[in-house]
Picture 1 (cartoon, rainbow, N blue to C red):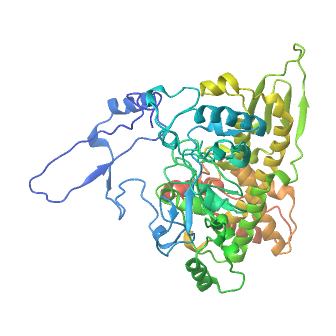
Picture 2: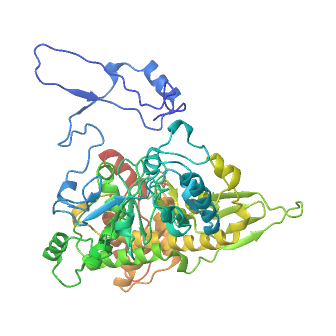
Picture 3: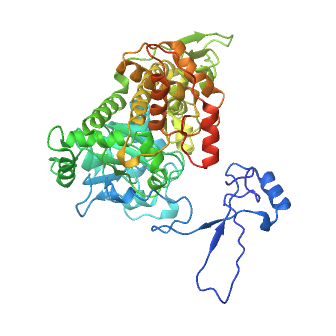
Length: 555
């Protein structure tokens, strides 16, 4: 890892020590490899080096896979799945893809000028920008451009070529700026460096699957949208947001199906014609991108190329899950808010002033501290487990409502009017809805995780979160008991979960199919009612340790 804490030189580049040995009698090569734990501190690494002998270390012989990867090798079956689109995006020039067109989001080059919570303020910024831009002659001296606006290579190229009526526009449109955060976007395109496929995809009503995977340090993220979106929609580090569209539009405004006939034929060949439509395929893809087992199995592949989609046994179920997720994620403003509680502790302050914004999560307590006066409680801790990139959906909302000093000097001087107090009530209302979306999304993805997938059988899932373990065990026991006409109660659930709580740190991953089989076997020992005998978690941990694998077999 990079940085002063973990890197022995305190730099942002990883460090390797190589010993090269040449032997005249050998024509082949051997690479032996050993690595220290990723989160080990620089001090621990130096101690290891000072106290270790190379002859005492156990090395692993490594060889590259078919893709040339020496470490972190990808799942070998990924290339056999259906590709959603070619990289890096655009129109696909050949068949063999599910979607005809994919693209990046908007790369404005000047977010503070083209986005705003307030449509009125965005119109005012357009007015100021247009006044400067229109004053530049077609033949200009680059060194003498006014510093009142942020110039880029693309913007300079547009000087003298943008029609006057385009410059005169002051309209805005709604855009997905960050997860569950919508802002007003500049109507005229000339301010935007790269509009991507905006005018070919949102020239009329449309749906899209925004996703972030390639080059990202985080697991694949996906979010349904129905409006233009920013390149940074799901981005907090490397990589950028791409999208797969349900439709595309011609220059004349004609709407065309963006799911290929090739894909439809492949799905019909696999599942038959009943229920297999292009809408259903679109929702099926969205569901697969949320599948915890898919994400875990192909995690390394997804960091290097666009998603590929497997054929799961029950197409209609996955399409239904995807449709439900899409409707919820796009219609988040219309969901029933989670019944959070609001606690007010007003402090003394000068008349006309507002409490200091804090906007901080406390997941363990199920609390969001809004400001010095207000807390929101009653949030299920597991709601923070619904993450997009490296943040939970809850934390995305909080981050985007913080007061931040603009980097652009003109925006900072003339348009820095955002005050959290003006948006406090709307943010609290949005937060309760995003909590609902988070909890309901997890409920669906946990159902996905309990389904055996033929293409990714043997995959594992992280159960180090006690609430996730509790929910999954509860769902499995309820399903098994109902199907066997058995009585289930809360005490029974606790009898199964409590032993696991003691080993929760070791329960890093579990084969969910094995978990279900093990719990079924335990329940069958009891003729009519639960509680059953407890699951031997300690034996599970020991078996995993002895086998040095990622599977947990319940003994």
